[in-house]
Image (cartoon, rainbow, N blue to C red):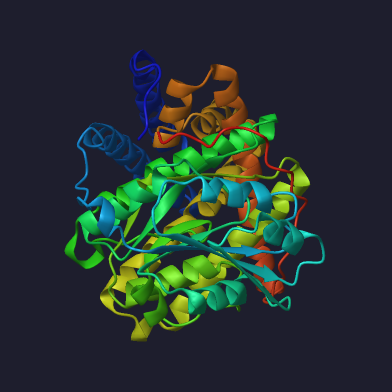
Length: 437
């Protein structure tokens, strides 16, 4: 669930954003030249304005809709289905202990945990075995990657439901029961959870906290409420860091693919292709470790960006074999892969053109439009954070992500076989588990 801390800011923020967008369109219409580029960019901005307004309406609809309690199954205390948590680990000695302690503290009667050590060279195995809890199964394999570790873990599952998590997460005690009740009550085969940030010790981590919330609140909540027949109950991804599955559905689509960097996106695409029902569960909550330096963040996002694009390329190559449901899912992936980089490149081409023509009025409008878009993200930031944080996110962190996404998507075509790159982890802070909210 999400809240608006300062609803009165909406009255201040919305009118200027609407006026600014239409003012930019008017200036483009008056000042544009009769060139193909100007004509294209004008109609692109027109489409963009309509898109921004639509996102604003979606935000209002989601905000009002969350007041309705979703249907949750009623499960007698003696009839809870078995749940197995799979946690792949590679050199996670700093965080795996806190993660397992958090899992063992979760209130769930039939909970089992499988830790698959992917050939760690540190003390990960010692930390796991030192806990000596019968609910934990420790498995070690040679270093073959996360996808193979998850596949080996799935083969050992003997319960009806499987939860995939990363080895650096904390969980609230009531999250799993609510998630199981939600999945059964909604009739879904898999649900993705809401990740938040555990290590909120630096400004960069705080900015990622905002980003995680916006991504979840906007796109995945929208897809979970989307009720068009051909694309009902789909998600762009059931995240490997926090994804709950019916074990039968998980096994029916085969082993996870180790040929792409985003094995969870590729797994989701196969679940969609087999017509399984996917959704976003607001009750499945976890707090994860995020990078605390720009270098580490850059490596992480490079993997995400190129992993998404690898799956898109694979799906496009199979276009003729895909059912209609998978084609609409591919459209959602294309939106995430192409929309913002395209906007970023076109906008800065126009900024450069305005500088060459020394059209400072138009240049100022374009920069304002990029810094204060009429989008759900902008609304949430402005209503929930101070102006300094809003500006820092919009003008600094946002442009870092856009530059990273654009550069590494282009880079993938020159290096078609990208490699996994690890980044330095930081120990989980000694804070209580995150509360649902």
